Length: 179
Image (cartoon, rainbow, N blue to C red):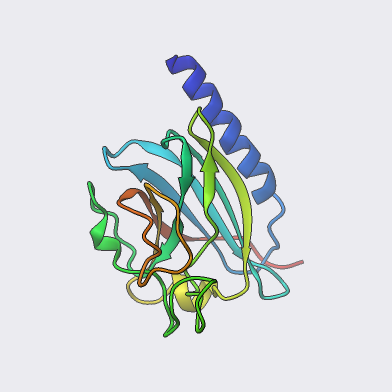
């Protein structure tokens, strides 16, 4: 079973790495190593501002419970287990939570993700509201948080997505110089 889990984690990470291989030199990029509440490494989030200004996010995790999970970018770059409350609230930028709410969504609101029975998520998302420089690299940083339940895209302030089950501090990545 352990060998299967390790193989699946490797496959999920390789899939994310392939997508991450398409980074554009010279543009803002970031990465978060995600850990569960026991401190076990379970995956990675890759983030890059695209030339169009839309932010690309690639999430690859293994070992979360089967089902639908809310994922958000939180306003503080800290992940103290077990509850990860140190990550603060969502990156909100003065907006309401959720795509189903007038005045929403937060820049930190991301789509729900679905983990199959093996606990694997490997997904690419795009967010036109999230700015890598302004929202992720401010003086207190940022973190990605995965929740136990799904985000209802309405309930304030966080979508009623349940406890925080995994977290990763987002750090700057060097993409090199543009050609």
